[in-house]
Length: 376
Image (cartoon, rainbow, N blue to C red; front, top):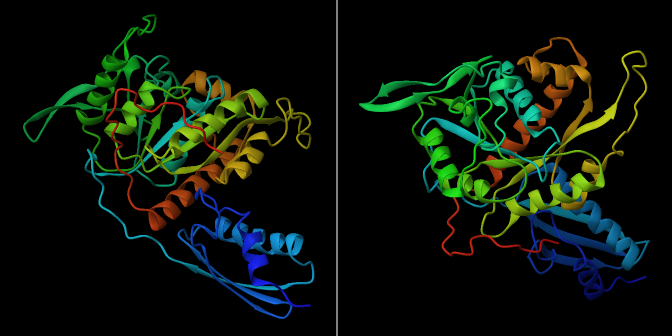
């Protein structure tokens, strides 16, 4: 049996690589194909060192050739990684802040703020310097979750300029619109006013040296998200979803927002919250109340990393209400869950910084801004 090189190239045109819109032949990922009888050698060039993307590409090539060309083909793949040169950040970066991670969700009620709070304290326990910007203008919950709802940022002078000093709790520096409004007061602001308040909390604050700033975004995709991404060079985004179809449909839109061509913020991955319920008296049982592995399957479909799953545990809700994030409970299953997820976030951040140029603050130059864009 002799393999046909053109037939193999045609088969490889049915595959795309994660993060690239074109098929792997059109994009140049397949640098060369050689055939020797029933043997085929594929030279593959990738632009990211992420192991899960490399493995998926190689597995897809083998599977496609076996299915579309010949099940007896002997396949060898030579993979080479060529990373683009790093560019300097343009836009208004905050001196001293190494990584800015946006935590988003397609819809409300999926536990995005709870996940943000627990990621923050877990990062701090790992020895990182961490800040949280509560950008959820219309539902700021970080002051409650960190038991500082009665605190107020004080004004200090830094290099002759008046700056806000973030409130600190559990070694986390934090600013929230909730510090500037009464608990019973509704924040009824138009977009420009909200954007101005956020810019003040970002640039008129003395954040100091931070390894990670986590930004707790409002649910959905809209004006506040654009304002943040126009103001700051976001390192990457984490999307939180629950497993049910309604939440997943909105989470998909959240991922698509960051991946739009005129935004282009790397998606570090998806976290599945409320993944399953385990009764305390039946620790080996898992009940999938909202469906099983929905967010995990979505991550695979969208070719973005799956960062982990958080179970439904009463103590997580109670801890948030009492102002002490659940991940601070030492030697508990919840501590272990958030440690694993946080390690994955850190690893994906490292992978992203090694393989991609620094993100620029986006520039929206038309009145239309970012309209609906179809993402396949």
